[in-house]
Image (cartoon, rainbow, N blue to C red):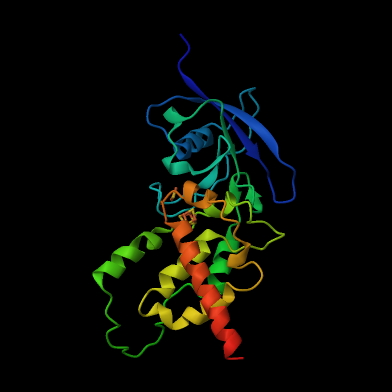
Length: 249
Ligand code: SF4
Ligand code: FES
């Protein structure tokens, strides 16, 4: 009796400028495999189903526990983390492709630096740089800590951007993850010193008004961030800031 195997089809691209091809693989089955271990198995014997020798698949991965955010890809058409996608729960052939809204670097690895550029635009950090003693920070009440904690779980996977119909070249929309970080840092007692700058950064082109409230982001986020609430709260604050700015011109 033939031993059990897993059928996989992978969309591959050798360089950013090459067109893509699909390669098919048949991988020996082991219980409890995830997509990352499946790709590792292919790397041990990179041969397609019709016997052609090929190269190991390129993909990003690091923590293997849905924390680093690097392994996002399309798995059977759905944007997911490879390390938490279990082979036993997937329909076969398992179809793997790179995220579609980001430039392909090679195979399943994409360039997601746009998220980091967007986070820089909104100054998504607490400004405490300095070599001198800054003393203790303002008090943060446990209730506020609990409220903000879910927003700090963002792993920068960019899945919310991939699934958002408004995240495209035409709108330049910054996406839900960046807006959620604006709420996190604006509500932080130390971070709020940059609140006005962050809100102004979201008032222009590509800012919060580009959101069409499709709510795909909140449904797809692997860390269940309260993205729609964050967008709605930040949207209100952006409008208030615009009114204030109008009257002090
Ligand atoms: S908000 Fe969720 S989906 Fe978006 S980058 Fe953060 S963890 Fe990923
Ligand atoms: S490898 Fe880190 S999130 Fe998947």
